Amino acid sequence: MRKNISRRFLLTTALASLAGGALANAPKVSLRPQLRPEGGAEAARIRSVPSVDALIERAKLGGDVGCAVVDVKTGKALEGHNAGEGMPPASVMKAITALYALETLGEGYRFETRLIATGPVKDGVLDGDLVLAGGGDPVLDTNGLASMAERLKEAGISRVTGKLRAWGGALPFTRFIDDEQPEHVGYNPSLSGLNLNFNRVHFEWKRSGGEYTVAMDARSDRYRPSVRVARMRVANRKGPVYTYEDAGDHDAWTVASGALGNGGSRWLPVRRPGDYAAEVFTALAQAQGVTLSAGETFDGTPDGKVLVSHLSEPLVPILQDMLKYSNNLTAELVGMTTSAARLGRPANLTDSGAEMSAWAQDMLGMTGARLVDHSGLGEMSRVTPLAMARALARVHGEGRLKPILKPFLMRDPNGGVMENHPVKVASKTGTLYFVSTLAGYATAPDGTELAFAVFTHNAKLREPIDSRSDVSPPGASSWNRRAKQLQQGLIERWSVIYAG
Image (tube, rainbow, N blue to C red; front, side, top):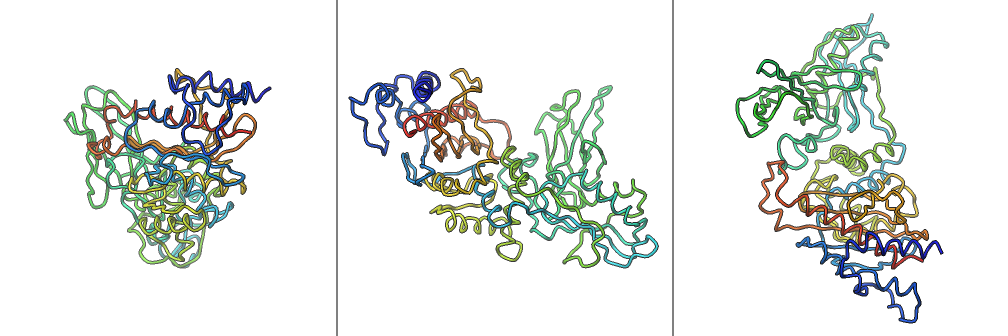
């Protein structure tokens, strides 16, 4: 009885709103045998489920739409539409990155950041340089550096005769994840072996008496150290809102006064991650009474005594947050660290993406996967919906990915969240302008589990977009809303057709 009620619920709520007049159509692409007319009320309800074609037509997305659904127990492909066509996965790729890291590094892997003395220590004085050596930690923050400064003091260090020097050579420096993105967006930061606060600096402004005061700092919930490695100047103009210039020893920003209002704040990307971390650590150590000053970054590989070691939390919660908040920096650093472990050497982003592509094809059976990064920000990556769904089905039994995926909120026809929706979905979303992707697991009311992928991409609508602007292009919001409605409609269809 519960099964029948749940299916009836699906067919009379969100499916009806999505399909409109298409509810009278029988499934067109189902790989199942057609139900006989004498199948009774249950069969009649199933026949009333809108077809994949009807749902796609209703969405009116144009461009390319691909989808696939796979039985997680048998690995059998149940239904698809353009399932073998390569499309941009957007942030769905982060699910692949998570699997890549878990398989190679292991669930308990921790990133290490070290303070290394290059000379002897006597009577609290380090006669030499102190190296802040990064290990690719994507979640190192100001609180973490403050803890390292406290422990340095506890280790008996009171003065450093040389300089505090940053080392990020564990991973190659990458100025942008994707150089087609706007200069000022925080989701496209630089990458290095040493990173702080997701390589973002906090910019705050206030207006008093017609004049603006600005501040740049590396704030956390406990500290607010000011920085000079990133500087802001208010310019008397209406636009562009921000400009950026590499000033040699700092990031030089300007902001349009016409865009500021009375006050506010935002995070901006850091393009000098080693210098940024070194400046912040120096201030925190000085606050502990340690005498030292920041110097140039350290070349080569640091060698000496490790005075302090800071370990990140284990890999699993890092990946869970990466998937929940879709953090690009975390995905890239995790992916590049994984490739370095596999190759035995650091690899740049292009080579690391190629290594993950080969791994995905070999270990996940993702034929034709071509991945240019680990976050999905670069739109030249290509994955087929069928390859994605099959990969998810293949790893389902391991139980490592599904628990760290984010719930996909099902909605009613008016856009409200349906807390008691009978279909439960754990998935990863992906969004670029006129690109919307979703992949994960759907659990039908009777407990049947399906792996699925839905990729939508309209290249024609993307073509005229100014990639250097972060202003949403006309129609992008409504297109994305229709794409989400299509995703939900397909999930609901599959949960009725293939349950039981």
